[in-house]
Length: 131
Image (cartoon, rainbow, N blue to C red; front, side, top):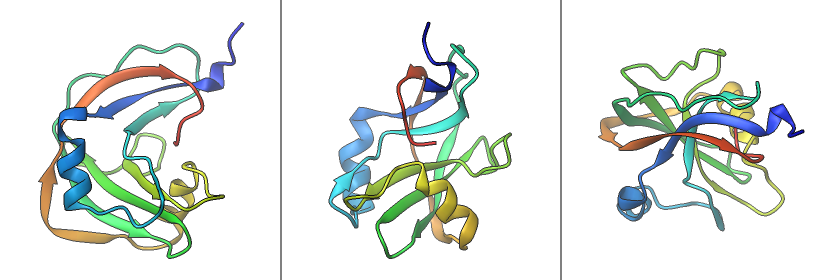
């Protein structure tokens, strides 16, 4: 039986937009993630969430190896679990994508002057992703 905590639902960053977004938001650390936005982590095999309107509305960097972009989904960056919708953008060696949640909770993120639309693709995935 599969580990139910290895499943997550959310949205993948559209591969067709990824390179343009990487040019717009240069990765600060050597490991580029720029992969997805999590809606829900754990809970077994879940179906994909629906289509959404998404915008990158801010950035956060802890200066020590975690960079994330804050995302508004249908107008809100608040996740149902109390977290903040985000894309782990880049990481230094030794840092983990799940640390984005801690960085966002511990420090204010910088809002963008103008939100940047991003196309996200609904997905239900199994692995050990960034949350």
